[in-house]
Picture 1 (cartoon, rainbow, N blue to C red):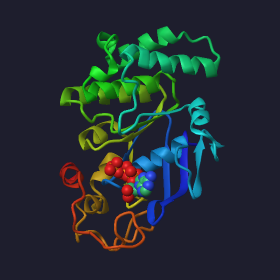
Picture 2: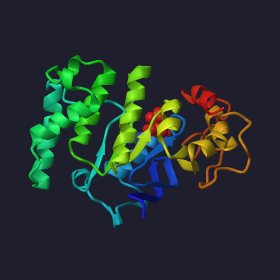
Picture 3: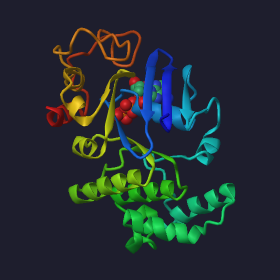
Length: 282
Ligand code: ATP
């Protein structure tokens, strides 16, 4: 049984069908990629998993337990942690205080003998922020601020870590180091779900990748399989070259406008981020 199983999830925002019978699995000890063009439904999927977004159909199962309508803080206690595409850190606190806050909250709910200060030191070392521990978080460049958010998530000792664009703002070297860290965390048993536009990073660290397009899962497979999948390339290019037979696992009608049930089709429009991604997939 996978650590996380998302089964047949539907989410609608009025006329926008943000997730369509979407399935997803994250195994323990692996990094799973969740990729797709802008507006494909990746953040909505994260919100569904961590309980911020109610679903209209389907279920989210963690470690064999159907999470039903559990609130986000209850899911956090079960071992789900996440970072946000738009950074969510405490700007007026130091780097250390941001991480310590999470370690202390976890200690309160877990009621174990963990020492929040020791946990904080370990996390600071793990994410490479020890030299910046005393800096106010809002004085950091975005890339390092993202590491603070990652550190704060790690301080809750999650079983499942959801990362939304963690490499955004990092330079190439920092991005490589982040990739190494994710692999190490997975090797330690964590299940990681990675939303990321840096395809080199995704292809390097993920053992499995799911591709969302128009809210449906277009393909799931190894990096090699995803790279070789014509439908995935067509989805990223968004051209007339898209195959006619639709997605592998979902009922996307490519004649529909992206993510909507009605309106004008824009099948020839390059959605932001598509062309660059297609280069890597090519
Ligand atoms: P990006 O890569 O740009 O972050 P994404 O793949 O994360 O995109 P989502 O943010 O999940 O995509 O959005 C999926 C669709 O749902 C989009 O059409 C988006 O405009 C729409 N959407 C998301 N949240 C809401 C909301 N709260 N209300 C209305 N529509 C929403």
